[in-house]
Image 1 (cartoon, rainbow, N blue to C red):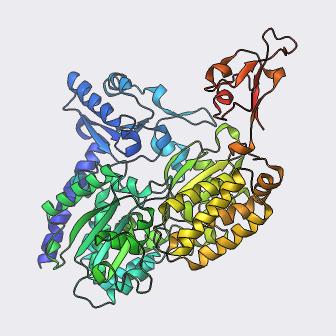
Image 2: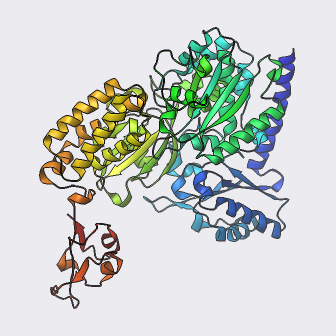
Length: 629
């Protein structure tokens, strides 16, 4: 009876919180709500100062009883932040500054007039869009892992309860652990951390292991360049991730969990800590939760920024206070993990999906996606794309939809060249794959991988040899050095790439690169080394002509590699204004005797012996008279 009583009590709390949140959104009793993005991106653009100014002006105007001001998680459209949303009208203002606050209060909150200059404008049509769900960036998205982000205050458990939190846990506690695992298996949920291993199957291994103590570990050590999916989920709705961990703990028979989050995420860590404290205070964490006999405690451990600790066994070593280096597998963590006890390691996004599966049901989750990849996937979309931000799309969405419909295409209408998915572990996909559906298996077949969700777009101005060098520099810095293939092989590959980019490469170097790539992949201990060569392999496959141009022609086609390019002034186009000379830090630009027809001022000329190729002249020329060769 105890669990029935306590779930009924929780139902009442959820019902009250839901009603309260719905009233706020609907503007019941004439009240308005101002929501401000509290994600890292907007906070770095003074979102907190904007919120403080709203509170100040609202108080000055005597509106404190009629208007609430609330911070929420990431809206996703990072390149357009900071955001302010007004309920109940659902008006979304973007690129808001502190000096805009008084106008919003005067015109919108008091006068009922939309401040049109702060609305988003669709580039293709020039149309001003008032509501968030009418913006193209959001139209093809579906929020599952990002549930609640941008809607609830991530530091208020009551708002989380009002938006569906802990309904999944409540249902799980009325089921047997085996039934919970079967539900996750039926949903087809696969790990969102990179490998895509079936989540329910991983849980079943730990469940079948009889031990006096088991653990659940949340991998929040997000280290891929340009990736910020896990950070945004923890910042926007930490309650969902804790709930997912608890459901996993109940399913496998664990009573303790550890969140391993990189120390560079202070906002995420603070909100996660607040969530755990509030759940403990409400009795949703601790002993005999909801009278079910299930007890669970959550702990936080900070990572020191080592990329290799994203590998689950290195992460476990780090939690134990050891150096973050991978362990040989088998045994796998489900059999022998944290302190040699059965352990399930899931990443942030995976655990954020679990409450949805239990709350809405396996069939609902599985109704989205492809045959082998169910549900949605969160991507950090960046690089050469107009709409930089965090997006969550159904599995099966094409790369074209991601880059052009959601991402808004390439700045300056430049040609798309490639997209790097999966971070340093992934590979480049070219224009021929734009209409390929995004899912775990298809990306691997095409020579890349899903990874944790980084998606870096490149255009015609990117040098693909230089891109491979960038990722190899990152891998060399992050290799733990435990195994020789990764420790030595990656450095040797970087030496060859540096040699090619400097114009000293030979065709023999390409053969050696391919041989090293195979060796490092086959013989490295962990996934960092096993996937380290992927950027080289994929760029050599799709852009071998660029490697050959660097080696044979001693030219960088994209004009990126400094030793293989030079800046030149086209005399007939030069107006002789001298702006480039003023920008040059080394005095490499001088006047010439040449004066183009119709020009009164002498043209300029760059001395290649003095030029340091900083690019300031190229960026400053208003007449497009400076070219890269």
